[in-house]
Image (cartoon, rainbow, N blue to C red):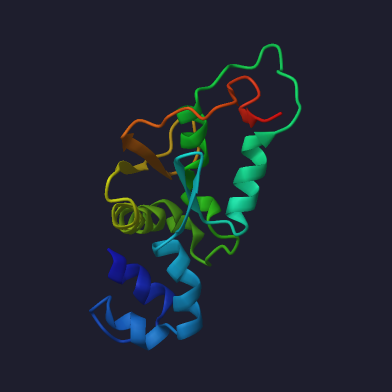
Length: 176
């Protein structure tokens, strides 16, 4: 299946081996740019691990999880620390890139191909960096809760410890 996509996107490359496209159509700059996708930056805050795929991830995550003041929204559902951490570690495949390929009718199939590779490489990255922890990395099909195919990353073991100052209504670690 992958070879069919590669042939369509790179018609000048004549090979039946998908690996050959690396040397025939790839380049060093793109390889380096995509290295962060396959071996993502990991940010550890308050004992939780976050995948960094946006740039400025640590600063952004720290800012969103910290507050010196604030007020709870009355009807806002209270979330546990683990639920909030998990919400940061959901990545819709269709939103990883701003460029849209010419053959966009193949989005689902292309995302499924990419997602299966990313699940394995992200899991390997997490195990390599945090050998004392267990993570679940899953490719999830689009459904009524999320319209896009996505990858969900969760820490399974040990259970995440709620940091001091956690406020589930504010969804922030409140400091004095």
